[in-house]
Amino acid sequence: DTGVSQDPRHKITKRGQNVTFRCDPISEHNRLYWYRQTLGQGPEFLTYFQNEAQLEKSRLLSDRFSAERPKGSFSTLEIQRTEQGDSAMYLCASSLYGGPVGYTFGSGTRLTVV
Amino acid sequence: AQTVTQSQPEMSVQEAETVTLSCTYDTSESDYYLFWYKQPPSRQMILVIRQEAYKQQNATENRFSVNFQKAAKSFSLKISDSQLGDAAMYFCAWSFQGGSEKLVFGKGTKLTVNP
Image (tube, rainbow over all chains, first blue to last red; front, side, top):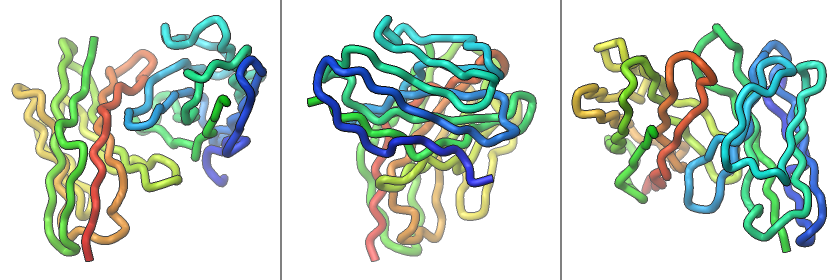
């Protein structure tokens, strides 16, 4: 297993466009998390899944954001009608519920909205 | 709401020396975890060390150790024999034991290691 993979690594989009990011967790991990990290800040929790169920969403996750994890495997995070304030690093992490506490993070997707 | 505060935006250390990064947190929970994560430039975040709040013994991982003061809500990271590869952003984080185990992060401390 090569760890948590995120695609793409970088995305530049025009304001108002829709973007979708993908995260492939470690295969045996049943929990998957999305975080957003802006410049000079620590990551902020957006949402998480246990298997295919989305169990919690942050108030940061506006109606323009949607996340899915079909079949409890990979996950996608879609942002509709992007705004300049959406520019950030989007981090995905996975963990095994009931296993050692602590995540494995992916390298992130850096989104720039112009 | 839980908060995590890292009061040192930047720190520097000479190679082979020891440095301590500070972290304080605020929570009303009694069962929780604390973490230090390392984020090298343009690379993924890596777990450095974790501490269970119910354990009085401070966690240690090779050159990394913590000073956990539960009553003071303080959780500092000591890096001994600093190496050039230790240069990175270091984030302190908190999570509740159970439930989502989502992390609350501090703003980070940028560590520079001078040769």
